[in-house]
Image (cartoon, rainbow, N blue to C red; front, side, top):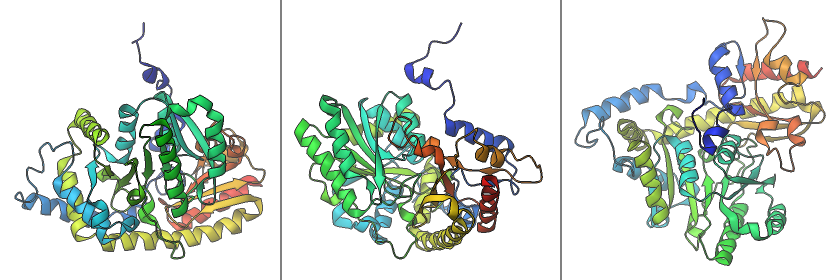
Length: 427
């Protein structure tokens, strides 16, 4: 006899690819020996541990400002943190936003990072088609399909989701175009690190706006800004938010402090027009656990108020130096075998497409890196492209020759060593 499961429960009985990879990483990864180019952890050196300690002391010592910090919080989020994020966005000109642009936008804090905001969308919005990129944020795409959504994965060009392919795919849907639930795009794509251009950002909003008007309903579009604070290439143009250009109130931004402060803070937020949808999102936070841990929110507020400018500069300088070093090493060790390599201007990923070498689990290349015959050789972990592209999309075959390489966690010399091991595996 078995417990009767929901459709989501039944789909969840088998671990997803990333679930298996994270479990293996936690189980037998040898810190300081094996090389992690896969699991997307930030570099430990970017986490300001002394400032975290100082923040906790500051919050504990000021109960007038940080009221009942170790008790339950409200489901909208800490007023201090909401104020601090708004001020941070304005002071740093994130997305070109100013106080006037934010005046009519509501900001709410998720219960457990940006991932919890994404998960809440699956409960608040109706089951249907989610329009996203290909390659796509594989963790969320897998979640969406287990929750009963369908993925319409649109290949990218150099600026993000390819508009010509998008229009053809929307036309091919026929009456099913009415089943679109929402649009979702990561502005610095994970896994590909393709930067969504400012023009393409607005063009996607135009598509969602047109469909909303045709169907006489709001079809929301969510811009996931997870890596947008890590634009470290000085030649890249600054990002421009689509929120001020939104005529129907359908555009939302999902932000996080994980990449510039610490993933362990689990601070994620949703910014957009107020209304029934955001009310429902706040209720979902209440249902999940009342709020994100209040003392953590207050610590994040203090850090934003006192140290974020210097921290942001230091983090980006570190990732820029690593991106330049790793880019050169990729060309030295793998360039002759590559059909394409993108990334390195923002975030901390490169996305590689090999000419002939297959990269999926079970391939000789994967096995020689993940399970080396010589125990004196470190394991090398990467994200296979097979996990990153939609299995029924246009890129399914190409994904078998692709991988995502993270330069976030490891130091540059160890990444260069891993690239040399990749070259040896190909040979």
